[in-house]
Image 1 (tube, one colour):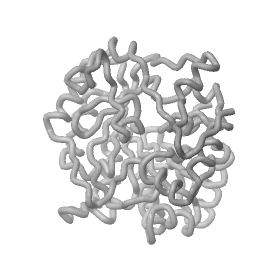
Image 2 (cartoon, one colour):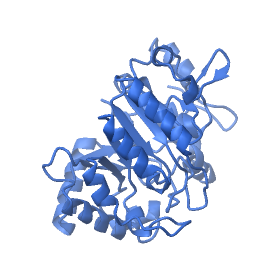
Image 3 (cartoon, one colour):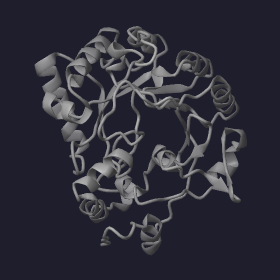
Image 4 (cartoon, helix red, strand yellow):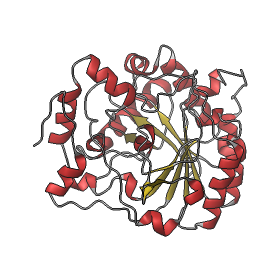
Length: 333
């Protein structure tokens, strides 16, 4: 397997070429839209570098263009809203309601605590969110690093675990995490530190048992996601002189079956300013989708052209292909 030192980078494209693995797009079934980098939290592992100090917001014209794309392309059945805390975009409610009229399945990457913290800039309350989610039948996907307070607060900040539990309890009260197929509550697990996630199915069983037993709360599924070696987490690894060890761990755990399920084969990621990317991680690294030396935006959106594009790969792609794989929907095998 490959290895590296501080003076080199890990070449994912060369790696898959050497094993004759072709990873090309198959379709576009999901438009993943990052509508803000503003967040009420500043988590250590956050690849977006989101925080209460960020000001980037998707404007109404860009949101309307996204809605046009959804309307014009029946193959795109899913809208995945992310941030930051996407609920902090002033047009979040509008975006959801208009996309719902188009009969799209809408997912929101909800950090649970924004319900209580509200908007850190304006002070606007967000206590209505659980009811709003239920009324519009959104799939709620929420990060909960562990079912114990210490590990969750270590990664996401003091007091986050307690607020998260209270938020899940409210979501349960409006019907989420039960047997209602229209109100799915899925949790996301990221390891605390430079480790690969444990087996998703067994970890889900542990989460369900512990959260029900100790807090009487329920959820539907658990998604395990590998910490990507970019931005804050990458800097954290380098500060600990652990970056190369972590990268070699990812490479030595490379799984071709996981690679064949990577999310960039069927999604397009849109940044707050309307630029197009193969995935959310590429977006944070400014690795735009570029065709004929032109970086594409939503104004260049053409389904056929994008399905036939070449995906841009980087060293972080080893994170999505290690072990059982990692995507916005959990493992890929």
